[in-house]
Length: 120
Image (tube, rainbow, N blue to C red; front, side):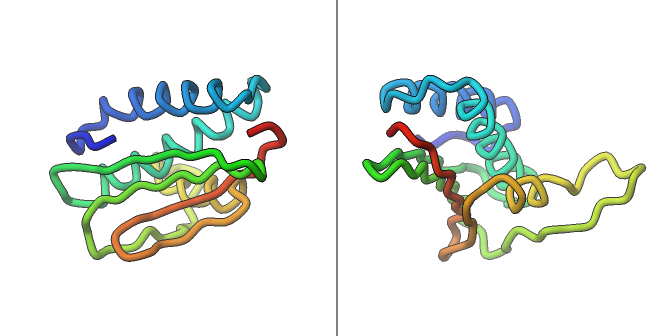
């Protein structure tokens, strides 16, 4: 799905995530919540730092049990894993992605991550 680079769109991406996982047979609330958190962090990062008007978001669940999250912000910048201080209000999103995702990276203008689930 494509949408305006508006922070209010993160909620729609989270809803789409739950729907895709539900159709794939993923019922574990912790797994759904973790994948939704990954989506929130990557989509928010694209909106805040992408400096663009629109975002492309896609989530897929393959037969091996991997969820692939892709967010294309059409910008040349790449996400950074920062060390946020204890008083910083932001800067922890990509730390969460690094910790929770099976893998993540950047291909062209698209940031992606994977998360392994048992039932896709």
